[in-house]
Image (cartoon, rainbow, N blue to C red):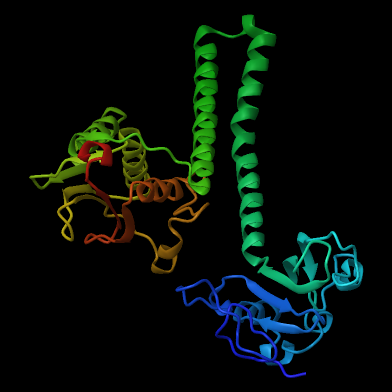
Amino acid sequence: MTVRTSRTAGVSAPHGAPTPGPAGTGLTADDLPDGLVVADESGHVVCFNLAAERITAVPAARALGAPLDRALPLEDLEGRRWWQMTDPYGGLATRVGQPERNLLLPGGREVLVSARYVRTRPTGPVRRVVVSLRDTEARRRTERSHAELIAIVAHELRSPLTSVKGFTATLLAKWERFTDEQKRLMLETVDADANRVTRLIAELLDISRIDSGRLELRRQPVDIAAAVSRHIQAHVASGQSADRFLLRVRQPLPDLWADPDKVDQVLSNLLENAVRHGEGTVTIDVEPSTTARESTSVTVSDEGPGIPEESMNRVFTRFWRGSKRGGTGLGLYIVKGIVEAHGGTITVGRAPGGGARFRFTLPVAAPAYLNA
């Protein structure tokens, strides 16, 4: 049997020219992100794209022309041979394919496999078996990330909830034994721990919306310089020295349209990180972007020890913590998600004083409906 090995077609065909892809697209099977394996009516492989080579570690030259069950010797998780169980060519004539499921390649490597049976007429003989392969590594990383998130959340919730339960149970059982000052102290502790739980739940909701692409923005005119000033005043009111903050605003600033609550969330996180983990003066620069007048940038710098060079590429990932001084390690991940949802960018580097330097840029164009 002569088999064409050309990769210039959506499906390579025996004894003839390759089957063309969609008109005018110039696409080939090798352009597909998933593995594609196609067998003809006799069960021999006529297409084995680059992704299939990568996923299976089988060269196309060896797979092309071979029987499908040899080119792709799949087993289920119980060790049963998949092609013998499914029998695409000799099974029920009403079947149209196989839904996606986890199967094993030789060596135990797990892949996601789905199949489509192509017939020229309903209930007719199978003319093509089209198999899609997907690597499970990305899904496994997602599953590990979710498991880690659950573990972190469980750990973070346990402490405040234990405190709330303990103090409330104690107050209910022995109310008369405590002085008013003792009761106040316990209730203040309960209130602080309840706020901690509320913040964690809000972070989890933000992560869910960011990961699913459902983070809603309610764009309004935002005075970014005034917003930064409010956050500085809040830190001063909570006990920080006013001399610790330096706000520099370069005018004129273009009109910024953004979600004010989300911008506040970004500023709150960056300033709190600079105050908690940094040292010396916290400098905030607000200015039109040097690369485009249609955007505004905010830079938050401190004079602390900064972020190690080897850690900078992990700063915006989940659970990254610059120190062991509290926090869930979710804040900067959420900050990045919010900035990017606005169409902006955020970067981290080393400040002139040696500390950490965060810079985010937001586009300032008005919403489309105002330009209509």
